[in-house]
Length: 268
Image 1: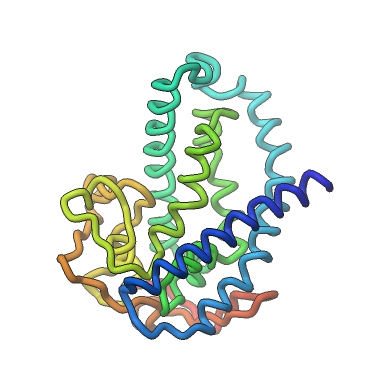
Image 2: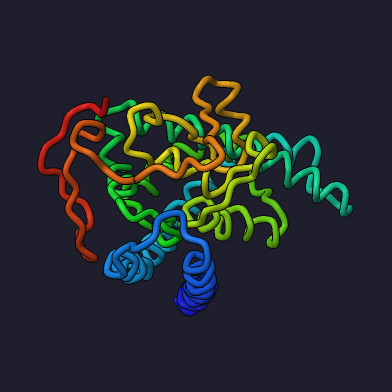
């Protein structure tokens, strides 16, 4: 229990610092001015609850993952290559892991958009009409259950191996803030190489031409390969959020029960 609390406070603390940092950055150069402060505050209030849920879920998933690795021999890479031992090896492993992870999450994420059942795990995230960095944690608890269960292929390949803690911090804590930031920032010619605020904003857009585009978390060229890439124009920062026409679902939000489906059908 002591380790759980320590880990929780560490993650919560770093998330709080990132929240404050991005709040300041967004105020200096917002993609959308005049966002209601209450919506930002609501997401911030939700953060401690969803972090506790994620860590509690890990307590359940970790023994199951360990048992699976014992049965399957520990994963392909640990068995045949082993952990990286040099700086170059760490960098190459980080890039390989990030790319593989992003291809995997691309298809899970895309499935959430096409399956009526799985859309229920994702609609809360897209219901945010005032997109900003705090939306990175605005997910329904079942979203994390889904990703944990479907993580099996990644586990079989990488076993217990993961990127260096610094790399993991960038991938799994920092970049969610970057992608969802309410920032008027585009990456120009590098847009196909690395995801950022403008490119990911397209994914949250309410405009029909942007529907079901830009699923990747880190590498937009994955969308280009699979036919879902949309490159925003120089000054294209569309409105975001759920619409009845696109989402076909109404979402309620409460800190203790954040997701209530009032009407549901397959998203168009």
